[in-house]
Length: 250
Image (cartoon, one colour):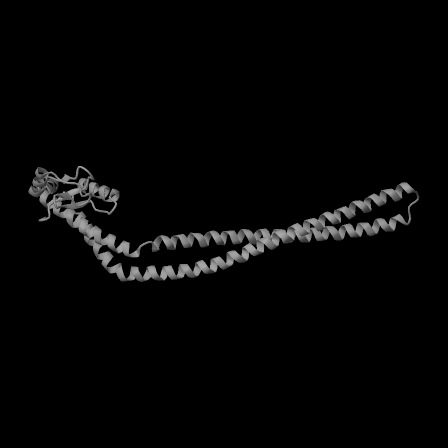
């Protein structure tokens, strides 16, 4: 019996009541839109700043890793130079005790090889030092940017929080009212309303006929169609923009 009563109640809702509920829902939705407009681009700006800071911090971590590796590479090359210098001293000492020219020439070649190794290591150290200097400068620049962006983020968040605090109670009241109105609208119409509203540039899914034209796209509405709208016997949409049309007296 409960199911039958529910169906009976649903069928008893007139088209006029449906249109009134849709129009009320549109008014509430527009008020919520005004609150969101008041916040403007602040939520997006906050998100962008947070993303930028996260990216800069990741870059700084990578730079610090690179700098540490370069420093380790420089130390390794310095140790290679020390080893080469020790070998040169060893070979030079051995040259004093050679038995023939062949041994002397062999040691001379070893000394020349180690000398070249030292030169190569010194070249690498210069390259690593230059690269490390560049990365340190970039790290310093990134750190300053993080500091600046963090201050910007702090200011934007404070501004956004102030607006949210001022409008929170009103927004919550409107959202609750919106949900209450939605319970009076059948699912099919509600789905259509949300779809139209989503696609509408100004968020208007329900508009009045003003000066013989659609209040959404401003195209002319034929007299017979205006009469049908005023009679409120069926849900009528604009043939140009698809918005739901209601008369001013509703």
